[in-house]
Structure formats: structure tokens, C-alpha cells
Length: 330
Image 1: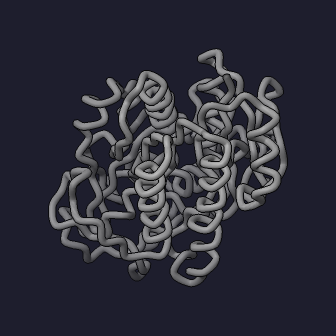
Image 2: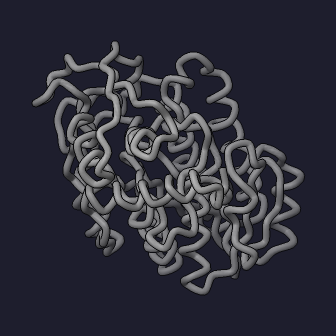
């Protein structure tokens, strides 16, 4: 059987393709290259340029390939951008996911794995955050992902489709072997931006808000290595193929680091003291997001291997140096 990876030319999707190929899976990638790179997709995977919202194209792919699972990564992910362009996010994240689900149902697709987000929790009342916490997103990004989770649950009740929705916390780092990494221009993720500053690809970084109710006044986040994250998806695929029931799981380590702690780690690992400026808060940023990370271990048997901040930072820095040398995909 084959696996369809939407958004497989992007940051997380390209890591997923490598993990699937390494596990001996046959992989089909669908990506419109709006944020991804054709060069990030290995030759061993079949690449199709197109949009997940194109029902005719997706239906043809599902007819022509023996696909038994869809891993859905395609979507828009920048919280502040979603606040200024909500309809764009509902279109790309929610409407396109609806079209993809409709094709999956028409094709009798049994397994679906969805790239969701901790942004569905909004500003949680407690931390670490369990999967049973109230879902109160404070950005169109979070709302658009929650709508897709709702569609998945309703679809699975009406049709013979089982799913795993994985709620990502803060994904960072790069492939330990240096084969792929985050290459998207104008990225906003902290470790990516700080690594760019550390290698001289940008003059410095801004810290958005130092007046949060956290130990040092900056936002606290649970950073998960991208390779550990995609291994969780592979575990989810095995779980569904083994007859596992539909479920929703957090993807994080259960430990948070503040913005200042991350900046200090990047400076320490890189050996470079770059410029840091404090500015006003950004809209849509909750103060503290740390995963309750026990359930994913219990349900999937997932065990992280790279859950160390300096390791995550080291791999991110290695990829930035690769990009700066001109050998990367950006």
C-alpha cells in the first residue's frame, strides 16, 4: 500500500516523507509549492504538484495509487497572519481539508492522520494541558484547525474512516542527518529566527512581550524536535493499521522554555551573541503552552529520542549554516 502526504515538500512534511521512506513505505506527495520546495522531496517518493482543494486531482490520485492512508500537513500556520487574513486561513485550512475529506470518503479511505495544533486550546486554565482541556482558540489559525478536527470526528462517525489528530506544540530543529530543515522565507518560529540571527542571516530578533505572567515575563512553550514529531506520525499510522480507534493526542515533551531561555540556548550553542530587542506583544500569543504528554506514550507507545533543547538548537543551527552556504533549498 501507499501513503499520501499532503504538504510533503514543506518543513514538517518533508521530514515525514524521509521517515516513511526509511520505514519502507511507498510515498506519494501532493504539494502546491506555495511554501514548500520540490528539492525537499526525495526522488524515491512520487511527487505531484497541486492543491488539496482540487477535488478532481485528489480523486484521481486516490484512484490511480493504492493509498490506504492520508497524512495531511498542507495548510497555513502563522498565528498573526491568520488574524489579519482570517478568510484565507479558513479557506486553506478548513475548506481545503473538507474537500480532502470528501475525496477520502468517496475513495473509501480507511486511515487519516491530521496535523493539528495546540492553538486549539487558546489560553488554557492550567498547564500542562491535557487533551480534555477546554477548546477555546484565540486566533483564526487555531479555529480553522479545530473546525477540521470537528469535521474529522463527524466524518468518522458517519463513515468507515478512522483518524488520529495530533496537536503539535512548538516544532523546531532539523533532520539530524542534514537532509532537510525549515527553509521557508519569513518564518516566525523562535528557534528558526534565533538561528538565523546566530549565523548572520538576519540582524537580530524581536521578543514580543516581556509582561506575561511567567517566571521571566516572556512566553513559555514546549519545543518538540521535528524528527520526534514525525516518528509520532509513523507510530500513529501503525496504530491505525493495527485497528486502533480514532483519537486526538498532544505532541510535546511536557516541559516548557521561555523565550529568553531559548535565546540563551541559541547564543550558547552557536557561540554568537546576536542582537535582541524587546517589543510589544503580538496578538494571539497565549502566555504558557506546555503539553500534557502522557497520553501519546500510552496510546501509541511513542518515545522521544531528541528531547533536549540544545540538541534541537544544534540541528536548527546546522541547517541554517547549510542554507547560508547556498546548498540548501531556500
